[in-house]
Image (cartoon, rainbow, N blue to C red; front, top):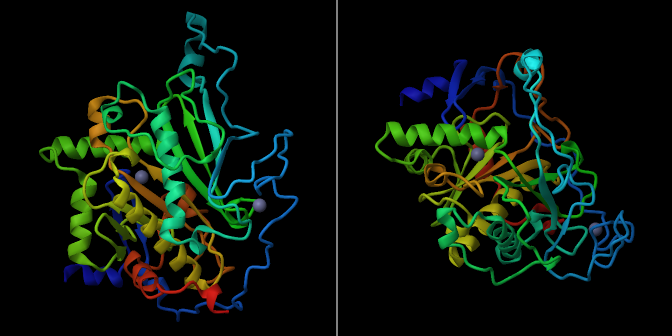
Length: 383
Ligand SMILES: [Zn+2]
Ligand SMILES: [Zn+2]
């Protein structure tokens, strides 16, 4: 295989999803793999923490009380990054303000931010949950997405009311039509998450944020240049043939360390067939998605026998977009974990990465092989 030589030489890899490059330096990993250096620990967290603002029955910062929920619970973030109502802003348009309008640009953003707990148990993480226990989280995401979907979107026709509504507020359509919904999770202190209670966030905003905007441009361009083929569907097919970067798969989803991964153990969960958004998944496909999430998070924890930190997020069709944008979107989830060689050795994106372009030592193929090898029971259950 001509690619084999890439195991030994420094090279750049192209990320077609973002239209960017990264530097790979595999020769730097010739030093022996050290594996984990710390002892594996059982979770010492309690099942219920009276001081946790996410545990069932507890009071939150602004005085609201959480219900005694049993699966998932959703509420509007008490410290939202964007609000539904705010003062109007319009950029100055006078000739005097010409340079300002060119170089000091701003635009107003409104939106709504939700917090969603994954379990009532304070000491569990997605890695501890079975696919059927993760399913209510996916149902809740789907419900929030459906409620915020533009009636003009081609997806509105397929969106079904969800059967398993999360406990908490009744999610109602906001007053304004937002463009983008970002579902994400920050897990672990290394990612700046202060509360270990399993939870994620859902931010909806006017305007398309940079990351999804960049991907959407690339997906649209690929379709135009390749007779309407979907880039990620073709990529999934290619990765299934090559096998070397595949971590796990079921009939609907493929889990790969992408060819262009920046983070050492970065993973992408992508639908094998072209799916535009959560609402395109039927019940079995949602369960397959839950299984893929369970496999990724459990393998992550098993890798260094630690509760593995990461940021994860879902990219799918915008809530409101042109038919071209909705059709070009391909449902997928990114996992960006910072750990490199052990529970304490992490990668920082600094220096060359900030000033030039991302760089990695361990290849995505090496990372995938390690993640493939650590499936099975969660290590904590064997302690
Ligand atoms: Zn809690
Ligand atoms: Zn993406």
